[in-house]
Length: 414
Ligand code: 5CA
Ligand code: ZN
Image (tube, rainbow, N blue to C red; front, side, top):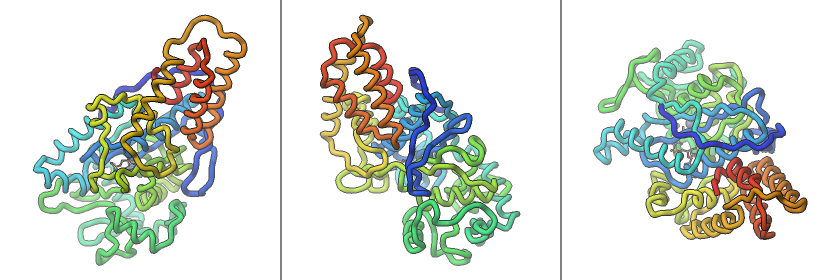
């Protein structure tokens, strides 16, 4: 799919220090050290009601990770999917009387606009599921031929037990959840633990045979459409290869989605999906997780329409650590606008006049403090506080270094 416009990221002299990132699977901070290129996969939207601030916060977290890698001198290869065929999308289309393809295309377009306005780095590969039906069908067939998948009626399921015997993957290892919790989450998040004929209630659907009134495609797995987790395994393997640097998404995807995507990929490639499994916390609104299904949404497009400066949206989101769960309050935008104004006042018009030694030292200390905070598990609140503290010293001259660093690392043009 067409991606969106790439913001320019100014370059600061890099020093190849990779960031520390919290790894969901090992439950510790690990170095997110790229080999030659940092390879990142982040789960994309299901395009039926985009883009709320929870989505924006998650994509901004992985935008920040890329900026930290770029700043350290690494190249980045970023892939993202679009779940443009799935039950919730079809249900919304039916409920609103809009054709599912039209709904998906409209929402993808809106998402692109929102991401562009928020200065979010686009993926290099932006892949809709409907573009890779053939490859997903082929992967399903390979799993079937290896004895790692089976049929229930005409649908195909992944055999989690057989896969664990043959692939470097253990169910529950990534999420660290016990079986009872996994069963509950599986049922809540699109799974069908109670379907008769399954070998294990946690076996996920790989391929769904045609149903009346649902779209379907021919494929090496037969006529039908893909299950959910396999789409991300196949798109990631196709574009990033196996064992890539970081797999990312919101924490609502840890189980079952990422756990089972990793299982499918391990069963297909014989290698782990990724080195680090990174998850952003959930943004709530009016007391509950912001979600399309609950409808408690603050849409980026609405905020933009109401005249809010998109840089203030970015700052309001960056004020929270990506890994924490937090609640949006409408006045957060006022605080962010105040912060933006105070920074702009000091930084807005860089002077060419040379700085005295103290001022130059102050600037390089500031850049070092921003980098240290961001390299420490993307600690954006600490990085913003470092800028606040420097702004409070009321520097009378400012070189281009500070606005360049703020642009490169926070994605904000002052
Ligand atoms: N298409 C699937 C992934 S393959 C999906 O989860 N789509 S989504 O539209 O529901 O979510 C897109 C991304 O936003 C996911 O990474 C999800 O974890 C994240 N997300 C959804 N709701 C929130 C929220 N309230 N706070 C933070 N992140 C969220
Ligand atoms: Zn996904």
